[in-house]
Every structure is written in C-alpha cells, then in structure tokens.
Amino acid sequence: MLKQLGEELHQQLLNGDLTAPARIFETFLPLLVSRLKSKYRYLDDPHLAESAADDALLDYVGNPGQFLPQIKRLDTFLLLVAERDLLNMLRSEKNSGLPPKMPVVELEAADGEYRVENGDLSVEEQVLLLTSPIWDKLEGLLPNTTDQKIVRLLMENERSTDVFAAVLGISDQSPEEQFAEVKRHKDRIKKTLQRHLGRPDLIDE
Amino acid sequence: MTDSTSDTLYHLERLARKLRANPDYMASVLAVYQQHEQLSEAALAHRLSIDSTQLTRLALCKRPNTQSVNFPEQIHQIAIYVGAGEIALAQIIRLVESLQVFSSLAAGEKPVTSTATPESMMSGLLSAARDRQEDDSKEPQQDDETEDEDGT
Image (cartoon, rainbow over the protein chains, first blue to last red):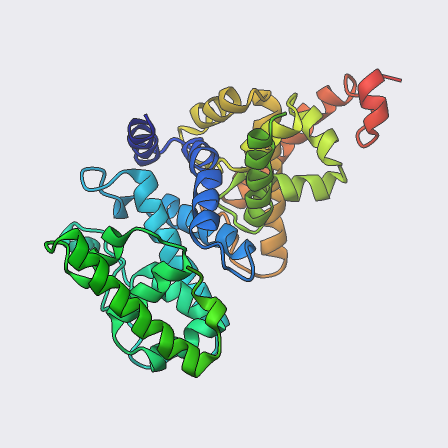
C-alpha cells in the first residue's frame, strides 16, 4: 500500500499539484524519522535524524526527477537519501580528522541502482564510525573489514552463528564447522580488543 | 489524539517552521502575513476558517503563482485540501506578494516573486484591501483567542 501511495504522490508532484509536497511530508516524514532513529540508536544528537529526514524530503520534492519508481519504492529511496544526508551531517560535525581512505558515499542513480555502499563500509558502519569514539580505534586495531563487521554484530548482540558464518563466507560448511570457526574468530578478536582497549565488557556474550 | 498522530503533527509543525524561510512554500506567505497583521496562529487559522492542524498542512503546500492563469485553480486545490476559505486564501497570498514586491523595490532589490509587476501588485493590493474591508465587518477581534471562541 505504501508503494502504491508513493507512486501516486510522486505522480501528483510531477503533475504540479501544489498540495503534493504537504501530502508527501505527512506520509513519509514521521516514517523516515522513526526508521532513522531506530537504525541509528547511537546518535549523540537524535535531532540529526530529524534534520536528515527533512533534507531528504525537501531535496526530493525540489527535484522529483531523481526518483525512478520503476527501480525502488519511494520510502526506500527516501531512506537511502536520508542516510546519505545523515552521514554527511556527521562528517561535517566531526572535523577533518577522518582517515583519508574513508569512502565518500554517493548515490549513483545513473546506473539505475540506489547504492549507498561504496568501498568496504556500509552507511551504517560509516555512521557508527563517526559517532562512536571506541569505533574510532577499531580501524587501527582491526584493519580487516570482516573483523570490523564481526565486532559490529557482537556489539548489536547478534547470537546467530549463521549470521557470523555469512560474514566469514563459510555458510557452506557444516553447522559444527561454522560454530568452531566463528568461535575462533570471536575469541581472537576479543583478545585483541581486551588487550588494547581494556574493555572486556565491549563484547558481552 | 494518539501518540502516532501527535508525533506526526510534531514533525510537520517542525518542518513548517523551517519552511518559513523558503519563499516557495505557503509557510513563508503565512509567516509574512501573520507578522504584518500581528496575528496569533489561532487568529490566522480563524481568518482562513481552519484549525491549527490544517494551518500546518497549508504551510507545507507550495505557494501558488498569482501571475499564472491557473492561479484560481491552484487556490481551489489548496483550499479543498485544507478546508480553507478560497477568498481569504487568495487575499492573503496577493497581499503578501504585494508587500514583498514593494519592499524589494524600496530596497532597490529584485523582487522575490519576479513574475509580478508593480502594476499587477497594486491591483492585487487594492483587491486584497477591498476584500478585507468587506470581511472586517463580519470578523471578531483579531488576536484574542478567547473572544474568537465565544464571540464576546
């Protein structure tokens, strides 16, 4: 239903309906804010999620041609744009101390796909990197991005061996082999973190 | 009002406040008019025959172009959406545009709404003033919410 509603509102906007922006804001603004705040719970300033949602919607309403309904649903598109805006806000707030190899996230609409992943880190990981002082140190301690993903899963209290196995690329192994391999990686990472950060509570299992 | 409804309204009101600085939206028109007429939000809503929630929705609509042949249709479209009086809505938009054009001209700047000419603005201003005179006799005191509610 939201998909259809998005398409209808998009068409109204294209048709020049002056009430379309208001209808779009009312439909998608609370939804976007809610999803951003839920997805990025660790934001120091939750109002950033509101600003990112505002900017995404205003940007879309000002230039509706950037949205291609045959590629994505409008709510999905808006969330991607809002995440990009949020990331850019965090970058602006954090001074130029970012590592130079941090990829700049751009939406590449030209190829018909809305991708926010560019390089090794997803938007979520980049946001986490920008908001958590502990995560700042992780890149130096754990340069391997697979290790970083494992840490993120552990911080999110992920329990399922399957999920870790997928990250490690060993989903084709037997459950017993997956369990042993996942445990080996977890133990290795934990020891590294405990040794360097002195935070055994970082990983609570 | 449910939590979800109040949450929605909170975000819409927040965005409407932000759009007061954007001349493309009705929020800027209403802000200028409210300041010029020294109205409370309640009085402004009353002048348009709507409530505060609908006033927020109105603020989030795009601003019609008074020079467009579609202006009456645009007014009608917005008025239907928020339940506002069409005449009052058109009046407010014309008045604000006139104020902005004359203000810009006086400052030696290019008017924000550059499609309007001083002549058309004067016509709009006179039209708005004439309509306002007719409405004044029927309207309660402008910025006293208590008086608006009970008519005393």
